[in-house]
Length: 421
Ligand SMILES: [Zn+2]
Ligand SMILES: [Zn+2]
Image 1: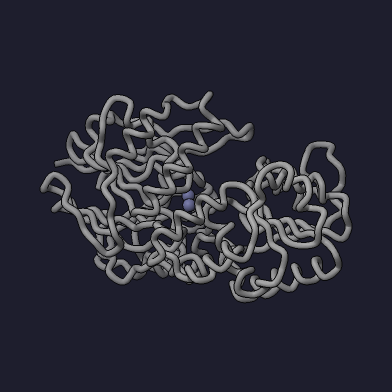
Image 2: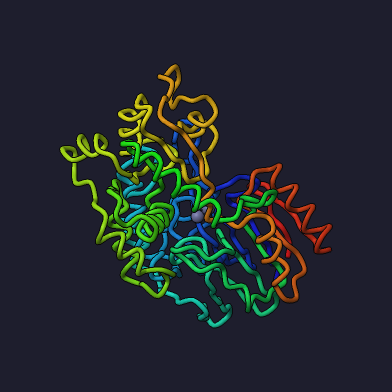
């Protein structure tokens, strides 16, 4: 039976992860996410007939991996597989997405509920049979709590899909477990396929030192952080190093952290995350929001790229204060206020110059190129590598390194391409 990989999204782009494994008339889907254009309008992946989807494997709960999933539940009810945390957090993320973007989405709450009703929960290092024909094996991807690597065994080929991966241990999650990976084809993310991150310990020390400098000087540090993953990592770090400090958090951070603590086995330092939640204060509503930035301390708030949410409110207040600071802790995409702040010193067109201290710290939850090459190398019996979730230039450089350093066949397909396997 002919087998193909169809790139429904994430072909030479970061985000909108959606890959279909086509076996005869059937499909097994890896993720079904969205991306956002310059005006923040959701861009959907390509479509396959939902009635022919035998299984949807959901790697983790970032919107660029789950945002379009309810679309598959308009005309059918495919069985989905995910970890407990991916399942629980997906609900919160998709509800919020519907609230903010419903005007652009071809689905509603009914389809979201249909998806949630059809999820089977998988643990790490387990396997499940689908239709008595395919086997799916799981392992920890090390990216955010609940993130999973899937291996699909069709009987003839074994196809591995990494989702987003990280190889280092952070407070939030242990690095990816690649010890048992075996497969013919590896579909791997290549977000940082051409660079290595600085040593995490050094980054953390500089971050904490900088925070102390600002706060001891009477200033407020705004840390814009995505409410799923990065915010919890920063809060756990602060709880370990500066628990005495006045730290507030704002946005969806609280509900998501509470869900993470429902399954502590998958949080590497759940003690620190618990300590953070017990020690630090959430911002409850507008009357508090109007006050907290006036006092010395740290505010961890979404959105991470200052595109909206409470972080945008706070930066407007703190921008003109030379004693205060904005410490960015995540990737700042082109055309976002965060990127503009780093490159032009302002966060909106013709906006005021930001007088507050601005710095960027690399707390990435994606493996750098050395880690990615290690993952490729660790896979037993590997024949070829498919690079997705990577900018075009980065993908080309990553592909060259896989070919030259590991002697493997590697390719970075574009959206819409079909690859025979
Ligand atoms: Zn992603
Ligand atoms: Zn992700």
